[in-house]
Amino acid sequence: MTEMNYILEIYEPGSEKDLWVSFSSPTPFMNINVGDFINPGIWPNSQAPMRILRAINVEHAIWEIGGKIAHKVKVFTEEIENKNGLRMRNLKE
Image 1 (spheres, rainbow, N blue to C red):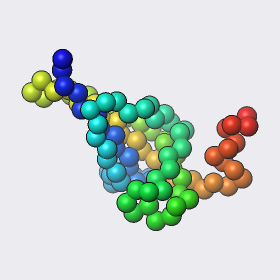
Image 2: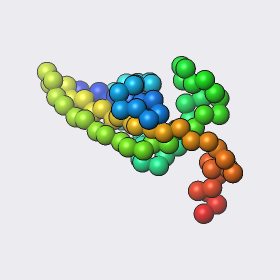
Image 3: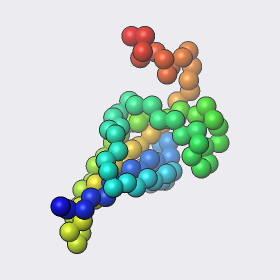
Image 4: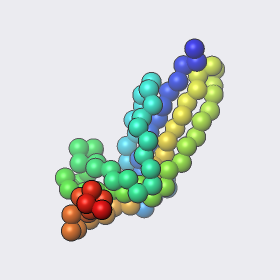
């Protein structure tokens, strides 16, 4: 069986270059789709416990080196405010 490595990278709001946090796992992460909310409340440099990010673009990269396959998911974000219960709005619709 081929060894797999999964990498999830989340970028600073409004940036394509400034990586905020990266996670690595031998098993896949759940899907993150454009429009999903991301709560970075306990990540380093969060600066505000109520900060909310929205995924605005998701990019996949897959490669093989030395018999190992890697799947990297890059998530680009924007910061949003939780005005008028934004988090709960989709549950009510």
